[in-house]
Every structure is written in C-alpha cells, then in structure tokens.
Length: 155
Image (cartoon, rainbow, N blue to C red; front, side, top):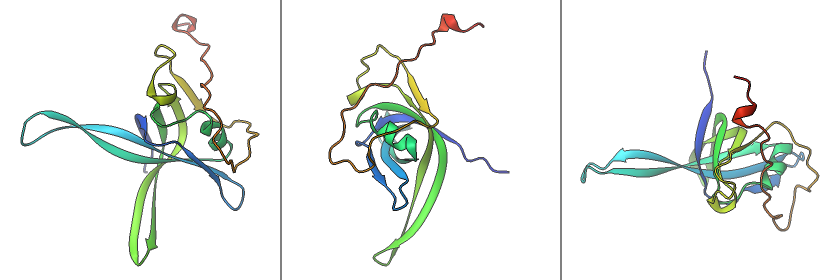
C-alpha cells in the first residue's frame, strides 16, 4: 500500500496562469513558497530557507480559483504529488508538482489579511462561465465568507 497525500502552506510566488488544453480542459498553474527552518552551520543561527512548489488545478475549479488567487496570498494546499519527466534540447528533465484537491485561503490579495484572520476554503467543483482564454486577468475577488462560527458547532 502507498499513500500519496501532501499538505503545504505558504505564499503564492506568482499570479496563477490559466490556460486550456487542446481538449478544452482548463489548467491553472501557480507556485507556493514554503519555508524550511534550518540551523546555519557557520553562525549557529536559525534561518528560513524557502522551497518553491509548483501546483496545478484541473477542470472547472481552475477557472473559479483563478479569480481568487494572486501573488503574495497565503494559502494552504492539499493534494497529491505527481512526478513528470521529459527531454529538452537533449537533456533529461524532471519535476515534482502538487495536483491540488483543496485550497484554503489564509489571506486576501497581496498577502494582507483584510478580514481579521478569517480562513476560507475552496474545494469541489464550481460552475464557471468565464472563457478559458482571457486577454487580461479579471479583478481578484475576495473568497466567500464562512457562515459557521465556533458557537454554532454543537460540541
């Protein structure tokens, strides 16, 4: 048995790129920077070392998420790892990326938390009406607000 699940949280390193395959499937790609804390051998001080993770979303969710995500936002990602390999200019190349199942928003556009610490999550399918090829990015909208509060939970 093997388990292929990954959970990361960090900041988007670039604005997401929405495109479509020749078959019409929408594909959203973006990067997330995740810090790793390590001790510097020379100074003995702790340092944050960034890891850059490529993330991919497919289908109707790609279009819906493209309207909410922007560079600098803090998000949590849940998904699975996919390794791909190809040859370019005679050199073998490979990469490991996250195929996104769920996204949780920790901050609004530009990484600033305008909602006072609220978290928003997005998963599942969404009805999307925007065309796959867009000449300019639509304005980033705030994710929908959660309607559940701690006092609403019966335990």
